[in-house]
Amino acid sequence: MNIISILILSAAQLFNFWGANGHRVVAQICEWHLSDSAKEEITNIMGTELLAEVTNWPDYVKSEREWKFADSWHYTTVHPDQTVEDMQRIYARDSSINDATEAISLMKDILKGDAAATAYFDNIIDRNRARRLNNSTKATALAYLVHIVGDIHQPMHVGKNRDLGGNKIEVMFFNDRYNIHSVWDTRIIEHERLSYTEFATFINKTTPEMVADLQDDPMEEWARESIELREDIYNTLYDYTDRESGLPSLSWRYQHDNIVVVEKRLLEAGIRLAGILNEIYED
Ligand SMILES: [Zn+2]
Image 1: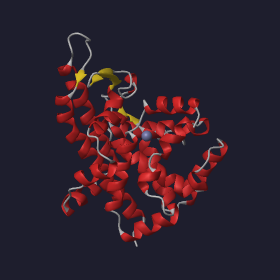
Image 2: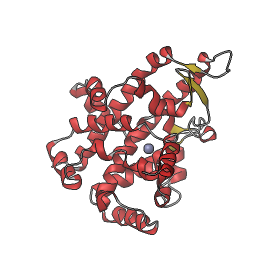
Image 3: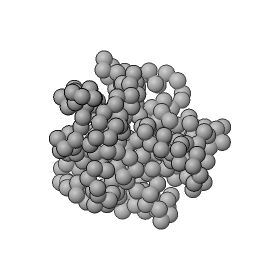
């Protein structure tokens, strides 16, 4: 990797994703909740690669001009005076894939074997000369599905666009300067200093009822939950303001109060993702 791509990658990391480990945690939890037939079909698509290995691919290709068209698939925008359904109605007016919810629906259809959805995706990929993961449209769709279900559970990925989902709001986090979006994508998770498998093991505490309930929720509900959490994040931010810098200064108390929220969202994302895949590959 040359210096330019390192710079591009680290710039990309400031925007729009659970950090790499957050996505891996979601993928790992999902693997643990897959049915045998779903596991088998996924192996047919991915070979020996784990979902945790491919889930960050959609973020890696963000640095490629050819994949630019997919940037808006990693989040959705819902203003405080709008509902998720209002935004979906607006996005549905044109045929392009505008946000995370439309992208999730497309990827599900492709994995179900829907010919029109597959042709649609193939067409945008080829028109943009973008490369596919493992030269396979299905593998590409699967990686996007695993990734975006994670993204939409990150509260700041259901953003208000005037501050780009919090990317423009500066905060101090344990004495370093970040924006609130990246604190939620990456910093809170990384502060625990766990590997993704350790993290996933610690949070994978479920009951069959809990799994069934979570898998019943439609994706509009996932987005609504993110909006509620997002509003909490904005409403409490200035409780932490540091007099000297004037910036919210987040450290142990913030970490302690919010790591539980991050854990809950990663677990919910993983379980719901498994629900989608189990449904697609029901035998
Ligand atoms: Zn993303």
